[in-house]
Length: 319
Ligand code: TXA
Ligand code: MG
Image 1 (cartoon, rainbow, N blue to C red):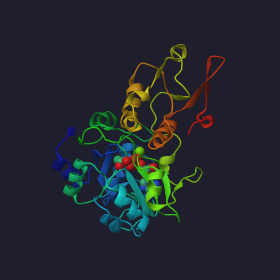
Image 2 (cartoon, rainbow, N blue to C red):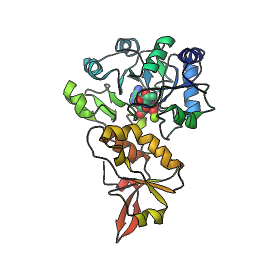
Image 3 (cartoon, rainbow, N blue to C red):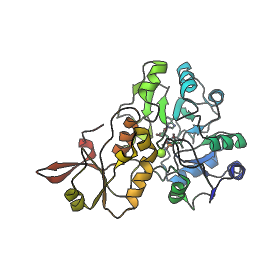
């Protein structure tokens, strides 16, 4: 049930249940982060593998010291600049955070969200909220209460309506576990923005699974999404029974980010068999948009002698 009643949702969460909450990035599937059995329900509902740790939403940087065993000064500097906001800090965890939240890792991802309804909810609860994005594992993250209902309706009691998400893609995840900070997932806070504040920040390299959110296939629609260098001709679209997902019409990169997941969802529900899009400019939040497109995609569409040629994502030229 979609509701705007913050106190009712807080009460449900106090009782160890799981509900959908709004954030400024995407909707989340929340439970009391300090209650092991409540958090276990998140994994069940999402069908999320147990190796994938969950972000904990807190109220302020003071909470970092409550839940993180070590709080590096660089994390505090970034928080002073970008929190509340779309940035998650991975730090060594304290024992109060149950192992189920962090999937047995010794670190916890903490985020101070910037959404008035969620802030009210956190204040009403008085405990931190563990919340991954409110989608079934591997699927598209919801950015409105209606989308969350389509994704998880019937599986939770309440979907707390906070309107359409202002950012539209998930937070930047940055780890302070290694000697130098590492970006594990790109988001609205870009590497350049972070480097202006704390100097060198590394980009995670593939291989070692630093962050399970970096799984190659993710954010995926139910039908194939192909990435092309340019908009294919109407003949090719007709031949493939494909719909062109025109992101350019949303104008700026921030406008594209806000609408990206709902647009993917809309194309997924249309009559076409295939979705085709072209990557956006690889700068600023465009990097995070291209990252999500590439993980959502199942191949690359090229042309040879005017005929469509589909290649595996691995061979894709962009990003
Ligand atoms: O914007 C967001 O971050 C949204 C909203 C709801 O806050 N949440 C979200 O959660 O995207 P989720 O679970 O879908 O993605 C969390 C990412 C995953 O890639 C996870 O692996 C990584 O953060 N993560 C969380 N805790 C971690 C940890 N202790 N170490 C490494 N990676 C971690
Ligand atoms: Mg997610």
